[in-house]
Length: 287
Image 1: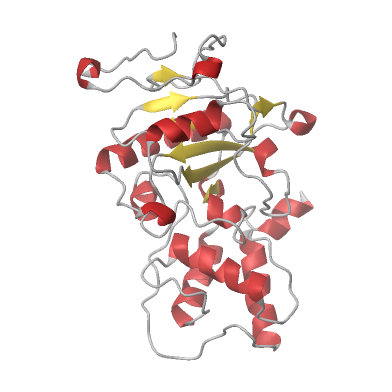
Image 2 (image 1 turned 120 degrees about the vertical axis):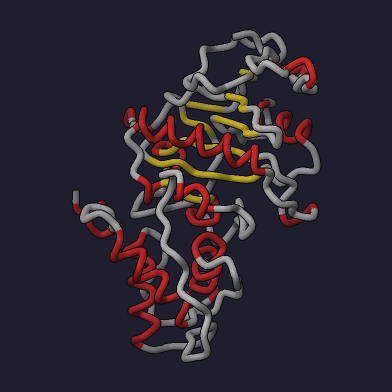
């Protein structure tokens, strides 16, 4: 498919996508998904380590003021970043890296004992300015496209629902995306991602920064069982707070404060209980 071509019936009314000049003459490739509207190849990719087959999807937001800058960032040599797909606000889907290749989207990250997340995942960038640029809501048409894209990847790659994650889940110390406005519940209603109804926020005991006790150890163990990269030190330190915050951005979005209250812990335990038997990080590591 030529770069910049469209399959949508109303493509004449859509703005042409910007192709960075440095890659305008790059050889294109056949998209992996039939719902891809454009192929804009990125130069930033490599081979998956040990021929690892992807069984995870990581969702990001672009976090840039405009789509032109985002595409340039993800496709141009020297930026050292890329993604397999970009989902535009109008629902168009751009593929930049073949699924068989290792895109550079997750950076320093970890999940369920794995540290090379780029080798085991498909990266999807969702066009949204992000927290630094006003953080607008995600349009319904864009979310519908994300759902359709993820469903196809899950079928092709046998990705289990609990391994559809946010960038903040795999890199809680560095990232906030796709953030607390991202409608994970809508994805789950369509079979994409793991979700339970968040427990209501009530008054009660909490664990927060500075606490040192066995309850903190138990909490850290529970987060690690779900997949978060967290040490079980028994001390509620900065990295622990970052994990709690990342969890809330994904699973308990009504209040994101890094405090492990009863709602946060009840939601975590409900998620653990609803995982398939092979879904916890401990069981993944033992396989």
